[in-house]
Every structure is written in structure tokens, then in C-alpha cells.
Length: 73
Image (cartoon, rainbow, N blue to C red; front, side, top):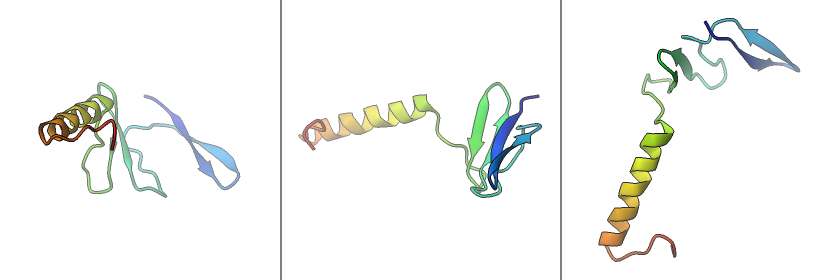
């Protein structure tokens, strides 16, 4: 079981168990399985850093095939 903290007015309050906890303000949900996962309010998971890096790599390659240098845009 992992815990965390959230701001409540002018102080931090303890989240006793992050697994399944939902932010009252942002409505995102935290899930602890093999690793920490964040989920949008509609249940979709946030992309991982690796997934975002792969998307950026594919986007860069697409620009290059269109003759656009992404470093100069």
C-alpha cells in the first residue's frame, strides 16, 4: 500500500492508499499495479514517457518524409 498527499486548503492531507484514489479537483484516478498509472476522468490511461517518446519519434519521421525539418519549425 502506498500513500501520498494532496493540498486541502492551506495544508497537505494524507492519502492513506493511492490505489483507486481520485483527485477531487482534477478527477484523475491513480492506480497502483506493477507501477503507478494515472487515468483520465473517462478511464483512459495517461500515456507513459516511453509511449510519448515513441509518438514524437514517429511524428518527427513523418515530418522528414514530407520534407519538413522539425528542428527548424
